[in-house]
Image 1 (cartoon, rainbow, N blue to C red):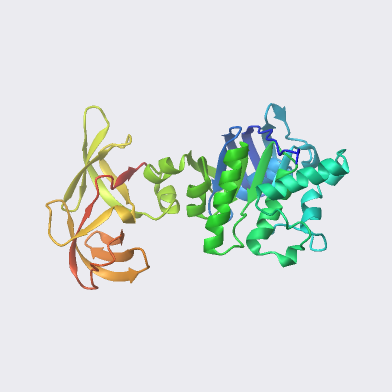
Image 2 (image 1 turned 180 degrees about the vertical axis):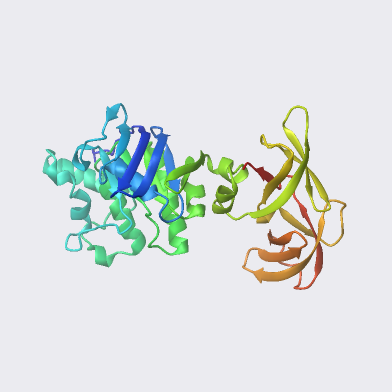
Length: 360
């Protein structure tokens, strides 16, 4: 087989892009962002935050109300979808039920000027890339959900787009299959050097596949950064609670050192030394991930007394809700053999990389 799927990866840039429906509904509000060539960037956020509208504006399926969109060095703001070198994988897969797998994958190529042999070679290469060699004669109804998703990806790949777009691509799959297919998508993207913009509302999915995550809220960008940056250093309580789970508590900053880098924080009987993140003395909020909370039998001198309120076994870890004078804390423990019982007294403390102060 001589045909190859080539990457023509290009960057995507939004410059102060706004999308307004009618006279009142602002779906995207003055958003500026850059997706570098060969990068997988995920747009993450709750329903109605603007992430899918942003994706559809890249594709040309929605036109901007103001601002500009560039793909590579080309201003595509006013170009229709047919004149943009992008491919989109939809949530519904959008396969033609009366066409077999080969015909579905080759559909976009058949309007090109390629010969029949070139179309066949590229289609077979696309099927091979997604692990579906030999499935060309099957109908979509004869495939599993995961296989249908791979057909949709192959159909997009064979067009060799500058940008590949995914709109909630795994939402119709069960949990185990979601993990498998997202790994396949990530491997393809890495191996081919594709520029991918990926939309999901699933935080775990976003953390697993992304080079960078853009969290959206109320039609605007709340924070952009690597998965680790967003998990470790959330910009505010919304991001902290949306990227994974977080306990968010009221605390008080008693002092900030001369370098303005280290804060002395009081939480009940506990005194903590934490990166100040530019926050000055006064009331503040702390975010603590559930897996960074320790439940001890004795007071180590830097802990809060509490009582186990709920205890849940979920296979590879235990989940606890602990009541304290400073609210209920949700904690996760890998120790499934030494279970703390409901009503048991414990002392709550934190791992070394535990709480983080949240900017206002």
